[in-house]
Amino acid sequence: MVLRGAPVRLLRQLSALPCRRDESWAVGRNEIRVSRGCKAEFEVGDRDGGFPPGPRLVTCESKGQLRRSCGTTIEQGASLRRQLSGMPCEEGRSWGWDAGRIWVDKGCRGEFIVE
Image 1 (tube, one colour):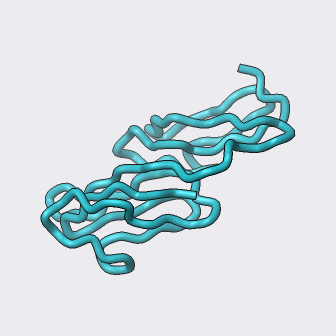
Image 2: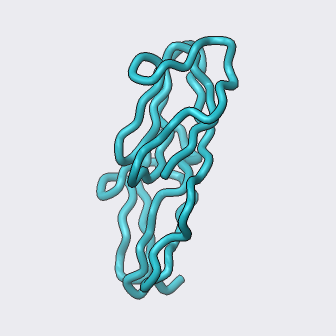
Image 3: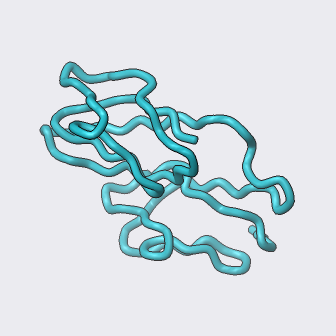
């Protein structure tokens, strides 16, 4: 893979261990390096045009009522598209987000729109 300055973002974390930019994954001149158990799908954008416009879907679930982080790159925000669990998904209480992840807790399982 030759990146040549193209932007890279975390599309979907596949590992149980967290994938955090500049901690467990980083971009070199011509490579994406992962460490500390991070396993993920990455998206490489166009050098001049960036990434394709539009939202992406990420599914994240709290197993055993425990808090879980689902790594993804969030530039503008995240919202719950569809609740998949019997337990409620309430923003700020059983789910939330920051620039590098969606988190879920208390049995919330949902499909999230990420931009």
